Length: 359
Image (cartoon, rainbow, N blue to C red; front, side, top):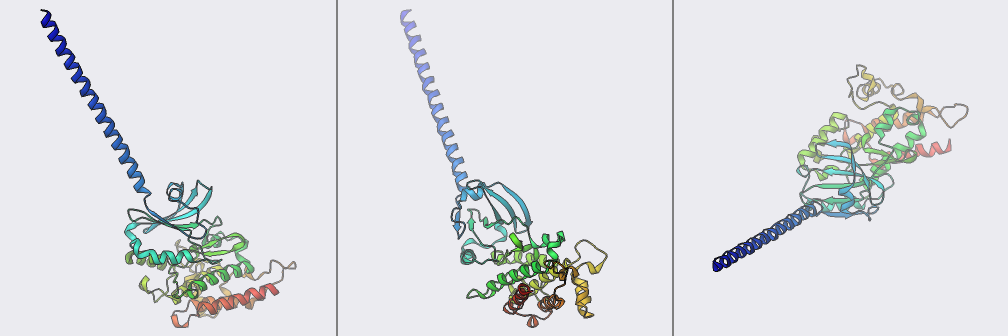
């Protein structure tokens, strides 16, 4: 009987020990699995920021974490990308992030020369590239300064007195021309803007213009670049001879610049975007009629000839306004060979600036 009790005790102890070992093994396995899961989760997070960030002048302090973790507000969308106003938490600053969709952009290896060129551009009237991020899944981010004053299209549409002042029009038009001049002549090979329009002219303090989005089409695959051109056509900025974005050149940029200049002078939109029944309320018809009838004075906003700095309400020389109009109309010539080059445009616009200073 005693031996039976001993046997039962031994068996019970053995079972308990085996159960204890078994439970221990389960715990160890669970911890291992849990640890592996944590490591797997951590690795996936690391992969999300395991991209490359190229920094340029003004963006030396940028980090991948700054860019990818920045709270952002969508301020623009297109088929090929999204534009964000982003707050960098680390230094409490605001930047503009342009996300380019992988399916619409060229391989990052092919973009390196263009990225380096864009990052080297420093000009008072061109929006600089602060940084370029390329992610592991082909995503790309361009980092630019953010301009609180908005763009030229908004400035004109608002229709406030400022946009009708001659000195403001001179300052903006001359600044845009200088930026375009640098793109066309400041490098071994001209940089073609490809999508110049009033929405892509950003406004700084004291009506200082900054040309943005230059060369962006070179980042895109042909189909996406062609959609950009189609959008420019719908908005009224496409030169009539331009059928493919890859064929854009200095003359097609000049055509777009002429339309931006006309927007400034008239306060009119390039095309009838709102179904307005008054055809003369937008540039397309009113410009054509004014040119055909040799009546450019009928087109511009006559408020711009009032000299706001003259206490007696005197007028500036109307011939100056007509001179700028002729430049704009020449830029919009249907024939590319008849359009002036940007050097000539700059020279003429700067002459207006000089005369303004003497008046």
